[in-house]
Length: 114
Image (tube, rainbow, N blue to C red; front, side, top):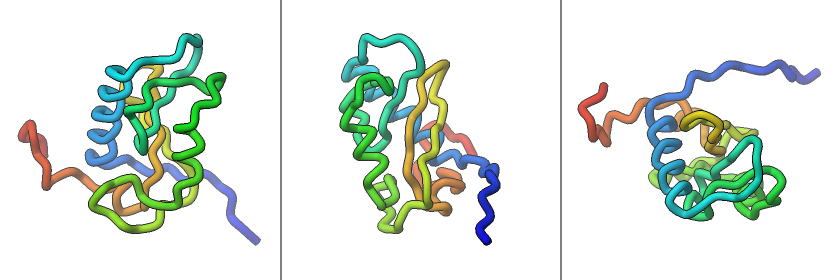
């Protein structure tokens, strides 16, 4: 019998920083004209900001790729997509392995945060 309960996983600083960078890139690239929830693919932030009404290719990319989105990682991603909120209504969709999803970014300290 499978266990289908939801599990709360605290996101590490590495994923949160990735979400902020992806959101900034997507905002620069442009946005869809639709109202409502807005999304960004961490796998392809240069595609811009989009919503579900767009049927954007970036959603397919993030759903179909089996690999962790972090460039230094070559592991399979954990099942499912994580929505990391970058600001307000903007959600950055991330596929990551569990170690990358929960790790803190200590190797790329840009602002002295620990």
